[in-house]
Image 1 (cartoon, helix red, strand yellow):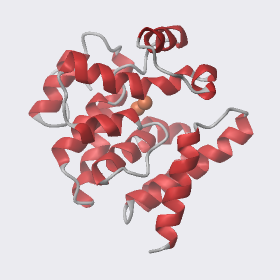
Image 2: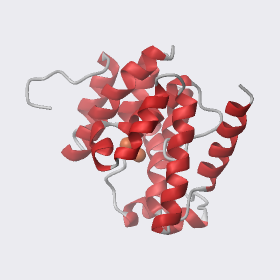
Image 3: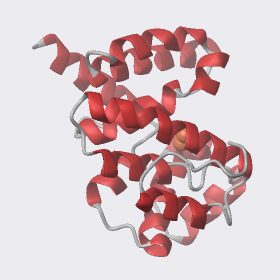
Length: 202
Ligand SMILES: [Fe+2]
Ligand SMILES: [Fe+2]
């Protein structure tokens, strides 16, 4: 975004953005801006509360730019019990830790928003349209699509169903984990199975 442009979002998300910009590097603020912009039409199309969707989108990567050492140190300082996969891939902690810090330091109290942010990497079967709109927007924002053209399928599915789009994304992630040899978060597997079961009943 060039100087002088008003970022997408609501007055509330813009206020949060201004506070986050003091500690979040520019490249991450730019990703977050793209997610907020992508989430808005998804929220409108699927009848989600736009304000809550965009607040989740604005906050979701507060701590994404930390290092492995910093994520682990913050988790340890809180006495969080870590899964083996979180020790192996500490980046998985940026959602849970981010939700905690958004509550404590940024005064966000909306449990739906905080839950969406906590689980934004693996998704969660309890997600509603706000959380799914933010989740899908995070995965298909233009810079990610440019790097992974196969995400176009997720975008196409999101026209009709955010859950179908989320399932397609989680299936791509499962394939990628095999190809690249990383461990999936067990919640990503659970979410994928729950979405598959829900969608097969429709
Ligand atoms: Fe993230
Ligand atoms: Fe993100």
